[in-house]
Image 1 (cartoon, rainbow, N blue to C red):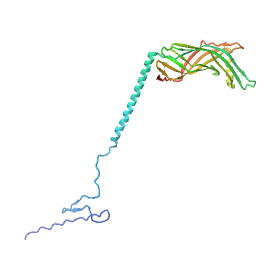
Image 2 (cartoon, rainbow, N blue to C red):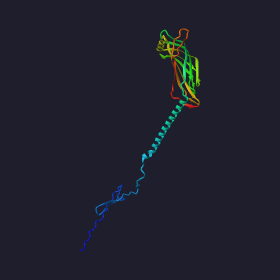
Image 3 (tube, one colour):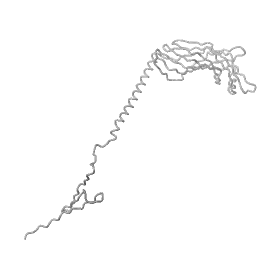
Image 4 (tube, rainbow, N blue to C red):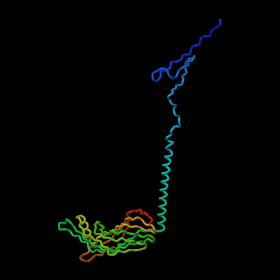
Length: 279
């Protein structure tokens, strides 16, 4: 009797999972059970879905790099240009100084005559009145060979050196000081007639009572422009201070001649930077 082969086990299909809308059926994945007990999963398929875009990834750092490099280049070139301009300016200034040897103008107080210094006080010592009259002779010199100075009108004032009390003011007209030239002004009147407070009158009275005389100081303020060939500078403020003047209070109708031999006039610039422009 011949042996019969055992019947093979039928393949069992797994039930389909429910759809997303709760219904059964439709396209879904199926599981298949093989004879050896293993299962095979089919691929999911959705006709309405789109495949994911797998393009080139966006690199933010890659896009910012050129912009940063442009900024760095601009800063480097700006600093380089500024340094070159500063270097050219320094070279130009050095060449001008070596060729022309610029010097500041000189001022001299030739004489100072004191006609009147009267300080009167009221009976109750509540107020004081000051009346002064000075006569000055001033000279200005230009030691430069290639530079000329153009001055605005001067404001001339006289003060006491110790107490810094204002004693009078005057004026000098505008003038031009050419190269290697001296200009002299005679009969410059400086005067005042003003009231003083108690403290100021007290300090001035102490200076006037000194036996060796009163120390005076003359100050002149103006603006000057420097010319050199076809170039000229901006106008800058200067102050001329002549200190070391010793005078005596005149008695009666006689005037007093102050001692100016020890006086020294110093020129100070109000602005240290001189800007040049082409005419």
